[in-house]
Length: 191
Image (cartoon, rainbow, N blue to C red; front, side):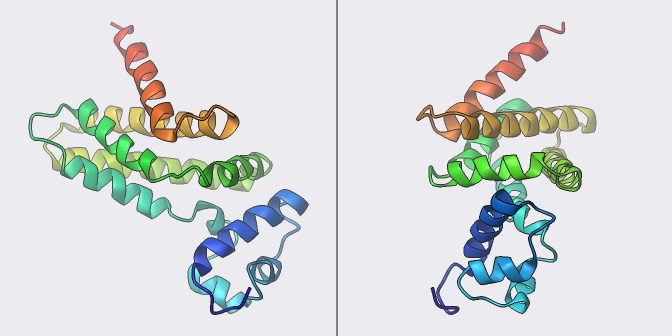
């Protein structure tokens, strides 16, 4: 694969996940990732990512934007949970079937490193905060926005875990509906 070929960012992500799965996160260098991605250079890697941890969380800012935009575009009479449900649909539908295997490997790599688990928790919190901010912008009171956003983040990550752990052919959208429904039922039983 030549250096000029398209999808450099995606190639770097796939190369990193493969190498981290094969030899471990700590043992893998940026140079090895760049080389595996098709003879790229370390400089090219750093044009796309600030560090080797960040390559595993590529696209997180896009996820935040998808959730925020979907909430902003939700119909006016929608409740906070309905807005979050619509946003979850948008986010989950952006994950095509070819992402399932890389997601499976990604989960394994993250689970193997305290540093990566910490970064993952930070990214999850950022998704929840972006969602809550979008809800607040729509006039949802802060506490309600925070709770609805946290429920949405839990639903997304729970669905992602199920989707990447299963051979079931259901889509991530279907898993998101399932998990979000379970969480809403659990919340209603707290009355």
